Image (cartoon, rainbow, N blue to C red; front, side):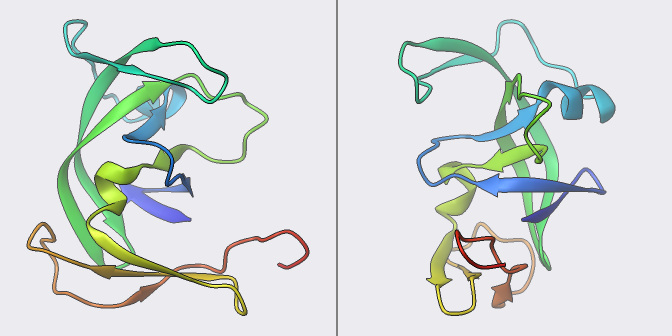
Length: 134
């Protein structure tokens, strides 16, 4: 899914199983973001165990025409084989009503609550790539 972070465009994965939005270490370095060594959280990756990871604040995150300010994100070491720069976790996704239109492979996000700094609107994302479709 295309996402704009600090004014630059990147590709993110939608991860409804992640509590936090995540940025790759490379993306954090590219954007010149710094993390405070005292500011960390524990996460439980899919393979188990507990990881203590650094946290940064994304000043501005845009999804379609919608803007979210001051987003907490964890910093992870993504494999170079992955084709995305970050993951949208539930700390961002909970601000939307999400509908997956499986017939068109489109994720529809409708803002809920007053967290959004842009006018409420429906945003139809780039069609998702589901198995067997494009």
